[in-house]
Amino acid sequence: MKIDASRFPALKAPPEVQQPPKPPSKSLITLSTLMMPEHANHLGNVHGGVIMKLVDEAAAIAAMRHAGSPAVTVAMDSMSFKQPVQVGDLLICNAMVTFTHRSSMEVEVHVTAEDPVTGETTHTNSAYLVFVALGADARPRAVPTLALETDADRERFEAGAERQRARLARRDKERRFSTPPREG
Image (cartoon, rainbow, N blue to C red; front, side, top):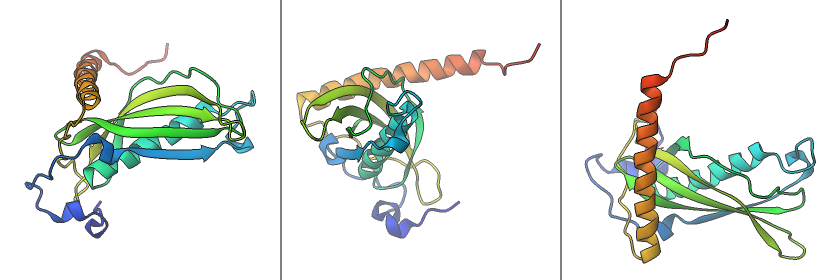
């Protein structure tokens, strides 16, 4: 598989050329979607899978904005739903890159539901997703480091580094102890 490099200017540079650092704020995006009846589950609330898909899309946009190239999801940390989202609510996903490492990026997504008539908002859930940037050859490529401009940026980065260490330890443990399920 090849990626059309003409759509992504960063892919035109030789792979060994590192892009300049970017502040997390440059990756910040807001994705807003009105929840309609086709988004509902059998209980009449918005289906959790719909919310997860929108979280993934928002995170992907933030990751691609930071990397300047296509990026693919490689992990999503646990997602707990604090409050249900109702049909008719405006689901708002705010996403921003919080940590980078060679070719990977962690993206934090904060999700709220807004009643578009009253303006009342409710924090429904948050999640951290990990993406890998892809080069023109569809293989992992280096991403810009983060230019940490504020104390909040630094705190998010340090917390992201700790989450990354935990993810890698969990992955190594799963590789050592995982066996396929068997019948009988």
